[in-house]
Length: 310
Image (cartoon, rainbow, N blue to C red; front, top):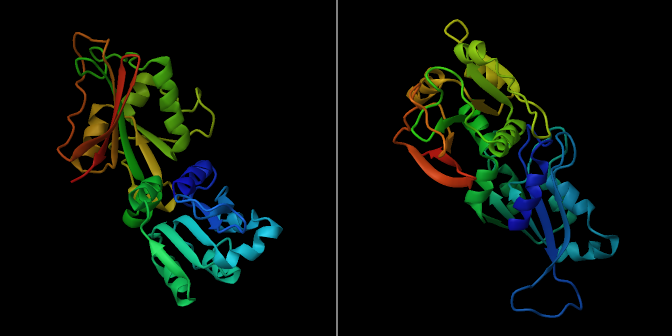
């Protein structure tokens, strides 16, 4: 399953709006030496590379060599997300698994998408396949947290983000100040390339004219959004435009408006421990539901990521 997750991440950019999924086929190989830790060998693997193309399971079966095809009747398929059971842009993967005649399927987590939600697992079980669910479940759900949030809550996965000085300000007496280092700025652009949209408030837009593009990383720039009282954020509109993730990089008022409504899933705070200013706009207060789950340090710049755990 660890290998499934590793493969799944290869589809981070192009699988959207579909989830990232990896699949691995293992089977006892005749003539192989017995081992107390290795009972089978990998005979095929794949991942969902691009929306509209073959799913992870399809690509895993396609990678099996002709001479290994007879091994499928004793094979185990590991897949990070429940196989689909409906016709979309591609046929149901559950039907293909049944057709191939594998003996066992191990699933990382159930798919919350309305067209699946356990139906794929039931179809496999009704066909007589031994199914195990929940292996590395938390890691599998974490990988596709944007996809799950989008379909469960009908809104994007929301990331609030700001950089602050060592003494807790996000500007220098009302004027923009460079807080990130060249390296952490590159990481910020990497994040932009991975998310669907980025938002700032009108004041930030008029004062700083931020491009909000990907310039120090490769990949697509996120959709640029600017809000104010006359143009408030419409989450329903974002949902209908298939925007699964949103970065909020606005000023204090914009960030506070999201915090006040508890409209956030993740907060990323970068602190430049070597920079102080005499005054300015204070960084937002972290809510009590913010639980730290990752910390990174790069040359005096500390990036802490918080999750919303009410």
